[in-house]
Length: 380
Image (cartoon, rainbow, N blue to C red; front, side):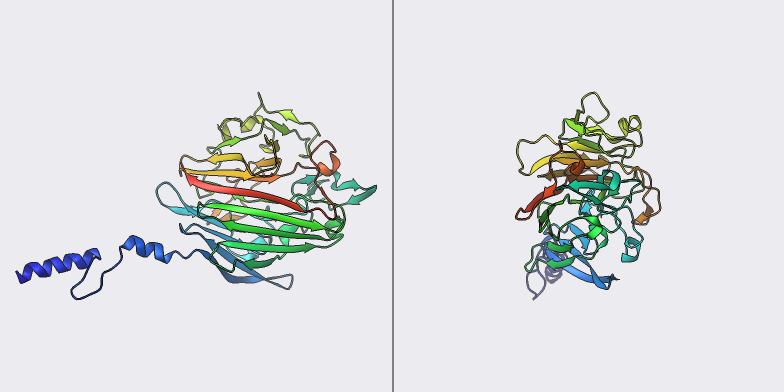
């Protein structure tokens, strides 16, 4: 009888229910949940421009993490599980500040003062012509030589357990050729339904073009060992803005129907990409009835089972298929090669300051710039 009692006690101990003379134990699943502390942690990540750079990790109640540095507001990783429970980052990112200082192609960065291109690197506003840096052939790209992606932002983590980070930056009058002192605030929030919300705000003391976005490169397989050609993409846009050979919009707005740009129904990216000279790097005009947060695009991958939904208040989205990636930089130990990552950049249209028929990007004193974009990841 004593032998039987001992065996029962041993079994109870191994299952974590009870022990001889001990306290009741919580199930291991509850222990695991207890170990996940939602909120923000930070660590020092070096210095540049005489300013301290930090790396912040946002963690939600599910254990999903998004890591962001205040250098360029860069999202360096977004770690989520695939359909088998294996965790990996769905965005391209690098391991050190030194690698970002080598000027990669905007991996994960906040883009401003003007995301995308401005033709001939100039625009006219209130009768004055402003000349910008021609850092993309003869055009201005993503704010110039030192856009918002290459500055150190002031960073304030949420004071409570909310996984949120507020970044702020003052772009001074004349910086990169743009007029006006522009105060910018960007809030990253990781929600408990595994979405990354990006809230952009800005104010100016002189009229100026503003077009803010995030330039994360996605690969839903979790590794740039794989291309993005088998990803499926659906875009809620019946029209797009055709471009010239330098990727500046012609000013036309054309229907996507009957063209390789028709993603109104989910299509594999690789199916028609060879019909587009150079690949996809185009602005899609979203189907909108108002300026509320609406679904703009859905990206999915059968290998990992992951799905990414993009919601935005913006009128457009730039789909870029990684045409200029050449393996110079690595992510997760693997070269980021041709078409191994893609971007879905929510935005106003490229070259809007020179295209009066496009929605205006001019922010005036007394006005408040405010847009919201939400990237939500889930399993199919």
